[in-house]
Structure formats: structure tokens, C-alpha cells
Length: 65
Image (cartoon, helix red, strand yellow):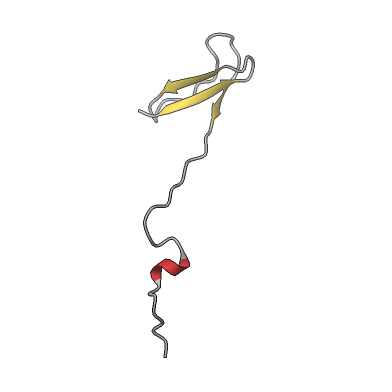
């Protein structure tokens, strides 16, 4: 089950909630009653292995004559 982070617009508290994909997003903070907003984080991107540079797919010798 995925975890979502919410931030309260009124008090600034952040909370993390486990919710199903089919669950509706939370709207109201249970403590202060303020409006909640989902916090989105950029996904990390890691390139591993060969094939990510122009020079990776070429052989070291030139085949053109």
C-alpha cells in the first residue's frame, strides 16, 4: 500500500498516511481542522550500465573506409 505525505495549510504540520490507490485524498486535518494538501517529491533517477552515452554503443575502431 503506498504512502502519501500531506501538509496542513493552517498549522504547517506534515503527516504521512498509508492509503490504497482507490481511497480519496484527505481534505481536513484531524487536529486543527485546516485544509490538507498532498506533498509531491521528485523521483530519483539513477542510470546504471552502458548505453547512456553516445560513445557507449560505438566500437573503438572505425569501420568506415
